[in-house]
Length: 610
Image (cartoon, rainbow, N blue to C red; front, side):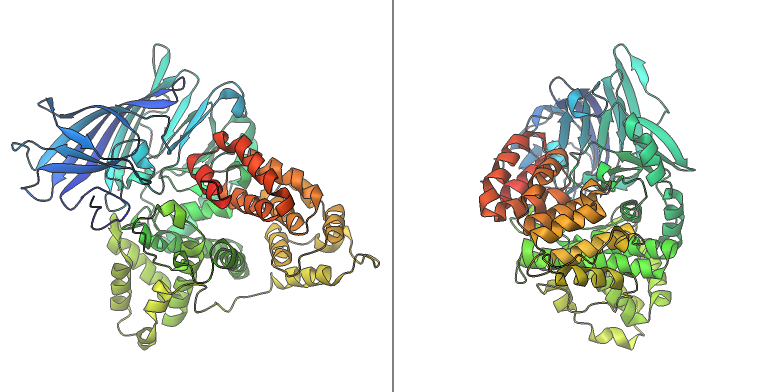
């Protein structure tokens, strides 16, 4: 069965027929945990002789497919499902025009991997159910039939009905401030006029409220989280303005943030007009708000200029991390940009050396994903190796004053398009054709070499040095001698410095002793921190030391939180502790049904469960 010639993860053929607009008419059924309704596809033939439309689906229940206008039933077939879905083949009539519309009536099924359904008791309010989507990388096909490839960008409109008491948000501006009451239901309407990829079609529905935090921004969440979310994300407009200075005009109109329930598997998802965010970002001191800078950057790096398929994912995430750090540097000072990059480097080291290995094919910046579900290749590699490559290129051409204008030109040149790495490379070399320094760039090693990057930035270590000094003191201390530490040791540390202090201890060999971990928590109170980044690292430090006291908080964290950044390493740590391996397996068995599909599947692989 042939896949798309331009995307190894899709059966669609946008080179033959391309979707230009989708109109969604959905009803949310919390009793059946499903979406049902119709999707109308505005399509254009790229070749007049085309006789079929190929789309991606995954465990959808299709009732009918008709040609809009005439109402004629169209013959269709669905091939056998594989890991990344099935091919939907729709036969076109000879009379079909170059531009035509297809109407598909269908419903999602219990095997939909894009949607998470929560019972009222699983929410903060306890009074209403909740539903949200996560379509990246290739889960949109389980929510609606689509050409599920980043090569295709289409506008969309939507009309969604939900039970009273439920508010619906989508990755598009609302047509009205509130929904229209229709009997015991409420209808919400949306219109996204900027063409987007299928994985950016997003929906959330629950008992959520909003609060204005800027001239073009609201924060949404269950009511109990509103105050904390509004405070932690109060700098959103400053981040938006800084991003515009770096990247150009913001084309999406509004920028809202929805704080989802804890089972959301990512830190954030850059859905246009409403970023989905994990509640693990909330710390009461804005310490983790840089994730919002990351999602804001995606408004250009990914959403506006997009990778043509997920082999070129670094064009999204590498550019985004690079821009996120630039935003942080402009708002908090250049040392903070370097320090953020140092933290990222630590994540990359663990990914290359522990999650994979230095020779693993997924450590390439541009991996071959033929026959691979993109979720299996997901890691910090495209994020950090990609941003490091951009840092290298900036250094090559003479610094930010030369490179930042290039980036603006790049976004302007390729906005609303999906491109490959070769397209980026060609534009870069054309733009800097008169720069001698770029002629010796080893593109092959950067793009297709395995392991860590072949170059490391000359980081400003003014913020990291105190972290390393404190870590060295702890590693040198013998617990049977007098303790030289006090609670004031890290009183002046920024939260990110505490994170890097713990990173350094986690990376040490041998690991810190049980007695040292115990004393550290007595002094610094890491286990009671409001910052999940700190708690997570304290737990991992304890697990490495085989400190039994950390088992309970480890189990508690992975039972409450679905964010893969935290859940996967802790499960791997528990699994690698032979005496606690069964704890990992039992905890996963008890919680897997509450996890979103991507988290559940990836943890199952980490635990070697088929």
